[in-house]
Image (tube, rainbow, N blue to C red; front, side, top):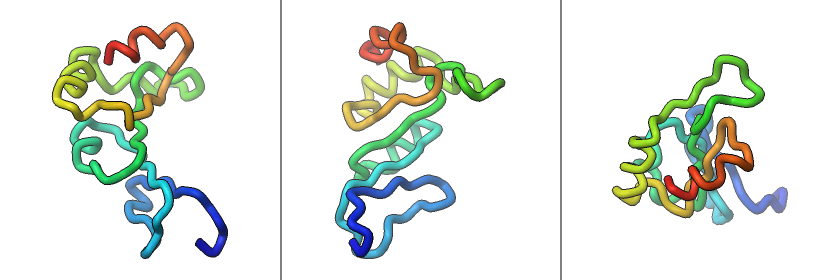
Length: 97
């Protein structure tokens, strides 16, 4: 609140928002289990969905079926932001997930 920021981003190194923080909270996740464990965050980033464009050797971590199953279970929803190798050509595939 002191700095007027609108949100905070959490990850494994910084897993908790500041005490009393009431802004938007997002979190980096690298598994479907991690997504399911954080229903309270406003946004969750899941990666890597596709092979990275900028990080050599950083490969997709999920099969298409795993992502579709996560969607069927409600784990993947409109709060989830896909990261990792995202290109405009992937838009139809991402909508499917």
